[in-house]
Image (cartoon, rainbow, N blue to C red; front, side):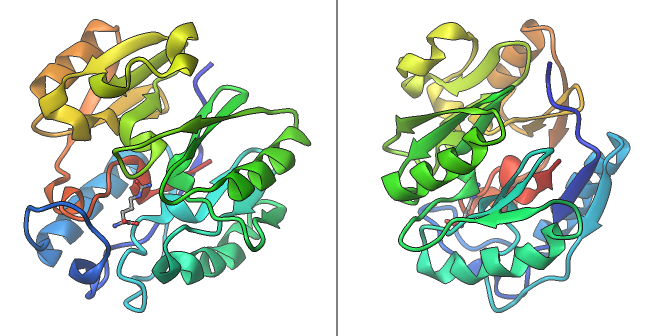
Length: 255
Ligand code: CIR
């Protein structure tokens, strides 16, 4: 069964947003437009019956709008990450008091490094990407915590993209959406695949929320492939977040 979420935590992009980390070459983001897109994102979650807890912008941390990287939340526990980029470590500490309102909190400790963007949940299985941001120690600490709550965890080495969820996401009912360049990852064997063609890689970070797949605007083949798999979609403009390497999943913690 696809997860059913009742809450989301978000944080608007801050004044320093354009100074965040990025590998993209589309120029600096327009903050006003990013705020408009962020508002539409929150409205979409609200319309899908999530209670949206929107935090204050945090100008000390340019990447702080990408809250997904700071924690992994299940019905039983919230695990505070230790992001792989030094400039983002404090973001995870800052999310901890917020999550304490909703869940018992556990945390990844030094020297582990792990970003929430590398943590892909498919029902009771977690696939954890070993990437430039997530190391074996971070993945192993998270696995130990999740396994005590009955989940199964597997690591997946991923190269050539920021996070595992930059390339693969779970759409429920044993369907994975995957950037075609990563379609041969062995763990995908047990799933039906929705393929994202090469020129549309960014849309591999489409996001299932309460039965609807949020898809970034401007990726027609991917949208069509998702609909062909029998899923309903909602398109959202993401141009300003794409400039900072962030996708739809990165903009919220959902639980
Ligand atoms: C970073 O490089 O950390 C941010 N500019 C983008 C983070 C995107 N997060 C995600 O994919 N979960």
